[in-house]
Length: 225
Image 1 (cartoon, rainbow, N blue to C red):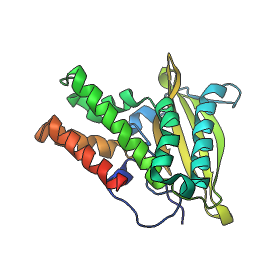
Image 2: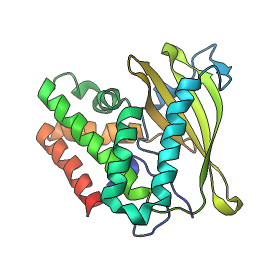
Image 3: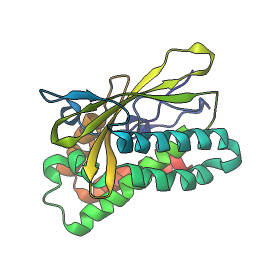
């Protein structure tokens, strides 16, 4: 059985080697409101949004490469291989800002930097931990839509070996001066960033910033051991 890794998957580890774990992708990410098409949203051909698609295809290619060499690389090797692609492909500062919501503004620049750095490490660790085997999976890019604020929604599917039910993966990308960056991933219609926002926001409000970092560090240590 094939599963997908995601923000929710950072909460626990699976003892099974399924290649990919579920639900949701790392981040996949951002609350559903960001992914909602605005009135007049249009469908584009792959050529019209080629650069956005390239970001997704490069991520998928690296994931498959790491999965195929999972045993050879080990966890640390997978982490090193995935880190550059994930850092370049995701708009992590924006993701972190949305996750913390109203709690973001009162944070100092140093606190924001600490949270972004730790969240980035946790996200990479989640991918490295979950994409730990290969069973003939493949990715296929599909429809592309232009949404509000110039964002792109790139639809794709994860195809399982043996003719299993495909898994839908919708990527929301934001235009930045550095190029297209992923800000949300919706797997099988599930975007669990809102759950993370509720969890992290509650800890920040009720326990404070040091306890929030402690929470993320705990999740990171679970994945690393």
